[in-house]
Amino acid sequence: MSGKTPIGSILRTAEWQKIPLELRLRALFSAGVESARVLQRIHDALNLAITNARGQAEGARKGTGEPGTFKMNRQKFIADIRELALAEGLVPADDALEGTLQDITSEARLDLIFRTNMEQAREYAFWKRGQKQTILDAWPAQELVRVEPRRVPRNWEERWVAAGGEFHQGRMVALKTDEIWTRLSRFGTPWPPFDFNSGMGLKEINREEAIELGVLEKDETVEPMEEQFNSRLKASVRGLNPTFKDALKTIFGEQIDVSGDDVKWRGN
Image 1 (cartoon, helix red, strand yellow):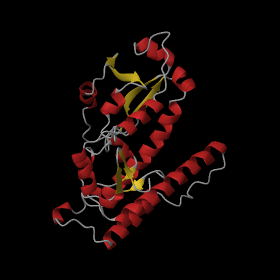
Image 2 (cartoon, helix red, strand yellow):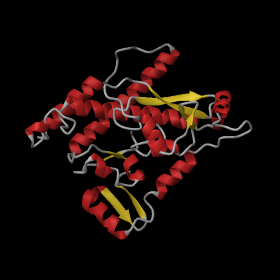
Image 3 (cartoon, one colour):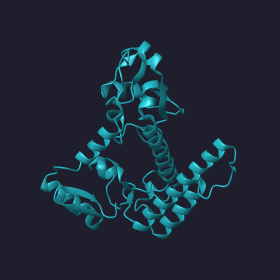
Image 4 (cartoon, one colour):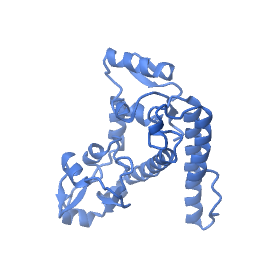
């Protein structure tokens, strides 16, 4: 989170999906929110919550944790950001949208922002650790599984097939380095969450089971993909045509730096 730049814009979620992945991953944004003050406060609050969570986890591991000492948690995040957003006058122009996910002052929207960003930070750290060669040798594959119930669950089996995934003994299993994970994700990342409020997560599969399921050959070595993924991120902002670059400058103004073949957020 500390490496992200707060970026304000009128873009909605579907429009943000058209922005190069490198820029999306380096930005802290919320659909339709332009207020720099609100986005900076969201950024700072999430950064504090992530730091708190890591400290609590480390304390629990060492047996020195102090439950209940969070300086920032879900409830405080929602209360703080809602107060500022109301002060900034960010209520929907359409009364019918009040209290919905399109209302930045609503508990539903702020809860979604908090949970999604916290999960992304946690799962990215887990993915990064999992790219070590020793881990890949022992646990080379993973399975897409439901980790939380949903009242109306999405059809993830259908999405798995549409993304090019294969079933192994009826299970959605693939190597950790398989392209299926980025294709499956709404966010273009190989770690969860793969969509908003999905309720889906990953279960690690050890080498013996991966071979048994037919995901891995007996003597096959799975190479880390972190460097390859980072290269793809950089490539996503290279070679952009002039028209698209002009559009980025029009949308984001002084927030973006377009110099030759280099496109990045100012201050990133």
